[in-house]
Length: 251
Image 1: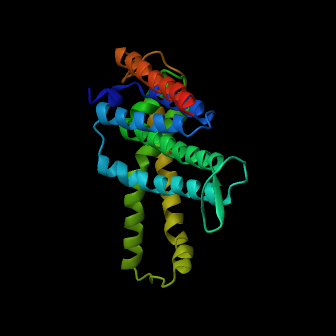
Image 2: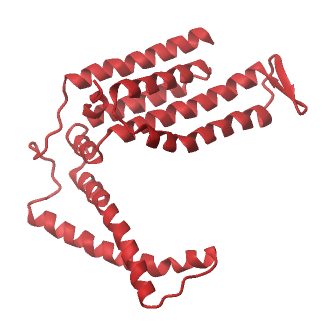
């Protein structure tokens, strides 16, 4: 039960997340995104084993952004009419204005929670393989993205090594932030040269092992559709339907 979101086919999950976002975007009442947001959090609580401390850390900037939307819409929003429900510092807030501000804030929270659900429960390599097998993404593009993703930790280590090597050779540490920013070119240019060499070696190695970029009918690591995907499709669609109908009824 706690692994259902992790075991889903990544392409099916990607399509469901995209469709849900598009559907919620067409509802402008505050109840629909609120119901959807709460439902997605419950879904993650019941069907995933994510690190909630890390989740809260990633949600912090989105929460600040949602509050910013709420505040700016209430204070600087255009006059939309309606009944004044409360006033402060000479600013009259109407029920229409308040509902629109809440709608924007809950929409930000719902979209960010849905994005984190996908990011925290999806293996990036499995996602690329699934895009190639189920959605017929070009193997040239898919393997290119996968090789670039595998290089990210290497680039981080190389960045540290180049910085340490330059310090050993007596490179001075700049005092001001704008000087340190300009001095980054001394690290980035060697990194770029190294990345080009690594990309060439990877391309030669892939060609030597028979990679042509043509679509294949058989794969070393097949990603299949299963009963879990059918079940989770029903769960996502039920959440979306209940949120849309419930939000329309409550508004």
